[in-house]
Amino acid sequence: MSDPTSDPAETAVVEPGAESTYDGTDETTLLDRVQAPGGEGREILDAATREVIGRAPVHTVADLNDAIARAKAAQPGWERLGHQQRSAALELAADAVDANAEALARLLSREQGKPLNGPNARFEIGACSAWLRTAAATTLDPEVVVDDGETHAELIYRAVGVVGAIGPWNWPLMIGIWQIAPALRMGNAIVIKPSEHTPLSVLALLSVMNQVLPPDVLTGVSGDREGGARLASHPDVDKIMFTGSTATGRKIIEASAENLARLTLELGGNDAGIVLPGTDPKAIAQDLFWGAFINTGQTCAALKRLYVHDSVYDQVVSELALVAEQSPMGNGLDENNVLGPLQNPQQFDVVSRLVEDAKANGGRIVTGGAPASDLGELFYPITIVADVVDGVALVDEEQFGPALPIIRYSDVEDAIASANRLDLGLGASVWSSDRDEARKVAARIEAGTVWINSHGGVHPMIPFGGVKASGYGLEFGVEGLKAVAVPQVING
Ligand code: NAD
Image 1 (cartoon, rainbow, N blue to C red):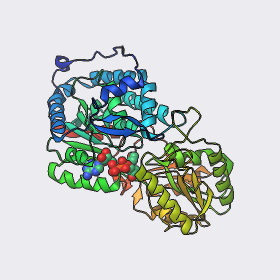
Image 2 (cartoon, rainbow, N blue to C red):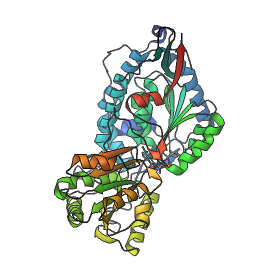
Image 3 (tube, rainbow, N blue to C red):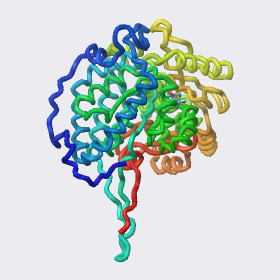
Image 4 (cartoon, rainbow, N blue to C red):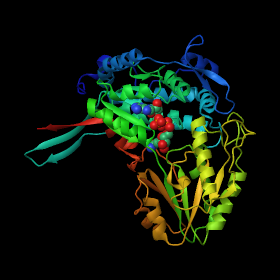
């Protein structure tokens, strides 16, 4: 932790209000900047076609140690720049992302699988820029905690130091930016290890941002689980921001026993949605559909089990099936498609297994229900499974894919109990034409966020985080800045 009060001018690298002069590049040039040279590294496949896109560098333990050492050395100067200059740098980074948006979106689409269109790749790059700009514009002011004439005490927030970020493969760039933007904004240096499934697009994003950032404050290391474990347990890492599964989150907590790294853990979810009686199925069908199937269901806070009142059950099921029919799936680079493949074979197997199990346990397949092999190896169609009950694996386990179980209920109390019966609590939603009634139900659901008549929407100023085994710590807005800062009391 360095002295935030020292003269910011001495290390100034960015003029506030400076204009970006960075031109966009094409996808191949971007890829060549980050991939391992001359046939080295690890093959990364296009999720839709399974062709080789490029080769990810395989960084060694020495590379990781070096990145952390350089981050540690660069951090005090970055912090000393002061809030205004760091914000200006983040604005320039957002300009650079915008200038390269199409190339980044195409690379992301190929590596992750999500289509360019719909709430997918272009949307994700737009969110990166929006989150950077919001972090740049957000301030975390000192808080006067006592000022009674005798005592004056203030809480100020300083940089933590070196932040380690570990990310998943579903929204690799957006989630990366959720970690990077506040960390840099508060004066930390950050070392990020993207998921081994989607390293190239994250490294490409970093290379674009590093056109405007000072050296070593933002570094990517490409590696697998072991690389993540080494980053999490490194003695010079002061804070870990982790987004991924609950199982890995537990390991990161164990690692923090050694280095005492502070943690933000955004873990798995199995979000419930409750449709109350009296709701108009047609009016909610589109939003319900995208709440469940955004990114082909591979979204942490997607609607993963839907409880529908008996009085509207059949209509909700048929309206959802109608939206599914109108939502084309296929190769993400095809401008018509809004749904893509599963990102990797492991996730494809999870979805296939859960759907087969649901069929064997009384589930009625309304649409989908078997792999869409005609589209490619990892395509699984939108699958709506009606008439399942709590206890069936598709309801109780996180499917993280395009298969939605719909459960019938007749007593709202039972639906609330069902929503709360699992150990996860990331998001939830209540659907109703009566907002007051919906809010009453929402207040009884154990989840970090409860949406009303929508599901999964995030906003850079609205805090986001889970409860129970979905993790702890908040991201976004002022709370998100606090999470990558250390409070210090100045008393006197
Ligand atoms: P994962 O836990 O398998 O992997 C996430 C990252 O952790 C990867 O980069 C991986 O290499 C790394 N890792 C693995 N073992 C590690 C270890 N021992 N120490 C340190 N790092 C390690 O998760 P995933 O399959 O990539 O992502 C899917 C999961 O993430 C789902 O459960 C989903 O709900 C969750 N998720 C949560 C949020 C959220 O905001 N809460 C967002 C997206 C995804």
